[in-house]
Image (cartoon, rainbow, N blue to C red; front, side):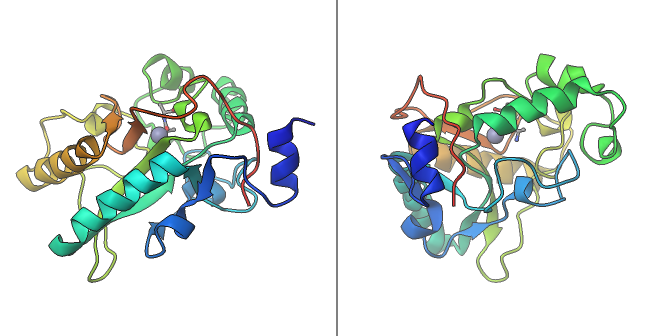
Length: 214
Ligand SMILES: C[C@@H](N)C(=O)N[C@H](C)C(=O)O
Ligand SMILES: [Zn+2]
């Protein structure tokens, strides 16, 4: 058993990792892959304990994002954080199975599953397994409602590209605010998904972890 797998089995995290709510106690977390509300339609292997973790460096950068948003009455909501390699392996199997298209209409209506990899909506390996990548949106602190970004999280299509132009001006402004504040705190985004960011100075740039967080 690898040492990171063993420590997770003991309820510990590998050195350098933290639980997000330990660093950001008021953080909203809706870990989609621990629920039915995702593009597969069921809770995923690797998310058994529904615990959001990241590297300490990424978590502290996110804490600073949250602190800068607070005076504006805004905050962040995390949809995914560290993702075990076994979950990524499952995504590959799922994408190759053309019988299971349960959630196609809601999440990838215009694409056949193998195209999700070709077009950059799913990666293997994924930066999420390095522990410094996060999927998130902005919320209003008054009622924890999400700002309108023009598509839901994990909608796979050009409508989710950061520069997609056929959305309203307030949706564009919301996406721009998310991009701006994440970049200001050391993250970089990707073209295909408005919600996906990686800490530029990530501490484990070459390591893909497979522990289950609890
Ligand atoms: C699946 C989606 N939330 C995501 O994170 N996609 C990127 C490209 C990834 O799989 O790393
Ligand atoms: Zn992501």
